[in-house]
Image 1 (cartoon, rainbow, N blue to C red):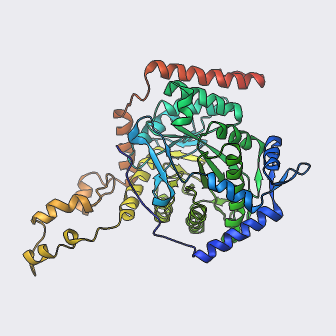
Image 2: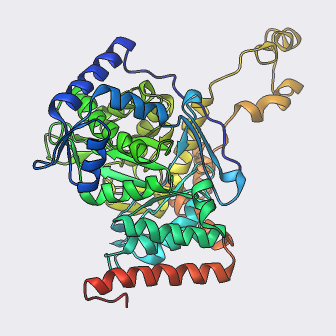
Image 3: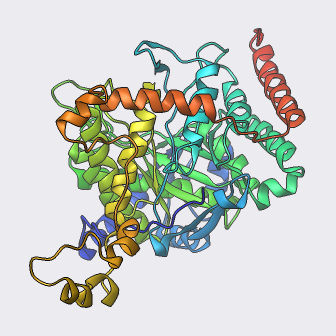
Length: 491
């Protein structure tokens, strides 16, 4: 299935003068407060390129002229490659195209029997295969962090497992520079050539900075190594208004903007032209519980506004985060629907965590994967809007049918109904007697059946078996090297 052409940007939270105020406030933070950079080499790079650097306190202040030069080299158009061209993602800030990214890094799974259990490597394989069959999922992430394998070096195992079970571009993560190099080696096995990894990267790396205003050493390790190879980077801030950033949404926009832009500057100083995606998974701190809430309406407002901030700098944007619901119920439905619809209408280029994630990213659900695919389908139909032209206004048809007539049998209806109607797979539109006759099934029950059907029938051969076996061996060997330094073993 080809990636659809979906365009957002209809919903705007901020006016032009408000965006300019956010920009000037960010310049003030960058030049007067600075960013904590916990990496000696990164400090040297900033110093060599005209930034003020306090090595003792690991502090960098970025002047406006350095920011401008870096932004001029950060591309607004590039491609994220799938294993076949039909899964390529053509990123173009000007078109406000909307794509989705799957779930991420849950430690727990809600299985098809309704049991909450620790995530396993088998769950990662099954959930990746399930998502790969969903038409509204465009980029794959590792939806769980398997708890039945050693955690040190685990990203290599994720890489090998996901790559064998999806056609799509992989949103990867890494622990350090060596992890990036190991993933490049594995990607070159798939592509047949190391040069192709830079030319047509089938994976990206995410670097998660720490609010407020901190770039941790390990993430900078990943950023520097990825930029050398021109691996596309999601440079992310996960601010929490009222906790790690100002409680006001405008204050959070400024804090996360300074944090992210500094990362983008560094990537461009290392290798100008490295694709960078301005990214957040920010969410409010619920003042009742003290918990992070990605499903709060204020969080959706923040993500929609951040899209405008990213576009102010001509940068593609990733937003979206988890929902609070624990099971596939009414709360899960309304939280996901509000979240993805607001992101889509705001023109968020990459709606992250949009499939299968619950309990604020701690839990992955097989059933919710299928339900979320349905919700995304409805949201995307709204995003498509309507065509207004002589054919769709249908004045001649109205004349033919006339007052009191019926349009059901008219040729115009037959010709156009599939173009204008969205046909859901799980949503039940029957009257009560028919619904009752079919077993009175809830949405969750229908989703469970659909997930089982997909897992039974969908067995794609993504990679040749010889390549798949070698990929697993490379991943295990790479993890073994990490564990051996810690005196442990893969087995």
